[in-house]
Length: 111
Length: 111
Image (cartoon, rainbow over all chains, first blue to last red):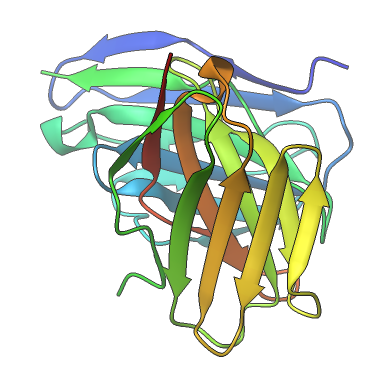
């Protein structure tokens, strides 16, 4: 199993550009989520999904969009990048009630 | 509204001694607690968990203690080893709901 994979590892965007962060898992987990990690703030939940076709907002959803068309994939879209979105982004997945597995992260810089 | 708090941003411990990381929570509905470890440039990895029906769970050098009346969680690492140097996050959830993370504590083990 590859576990949770994320692409790209690093990205630099200009303000106003859009992009999609990719996330995939091969463990047949129903639950997938996106977090951002900022210094002193821990891991904050952006969006999550409890299954294909079902998504919901987390703690900091503004400026981000998600969809879940398959069990395996959960892309995160930045609609119009802002410097405040400079962060490290982690995708995670788990079975309901199970431990959460994280991907390696995407480091995003918005200039 | 920080439901899970780690009030010590950093902790330094001598190799071989005990490391104690602390975590407080406010939501009495939480029924499952987890600790994650994170190395630089990697995603967090699951370390140990405890259900609210227990007050202690042990796994090798790692022990988690739960004090429900004080809404306090702690992770003990003994003996501490250089490879334990990392950022530690505590997290909590209730039922199948989303995980809520603390801000993290950076543990440094000195030789």
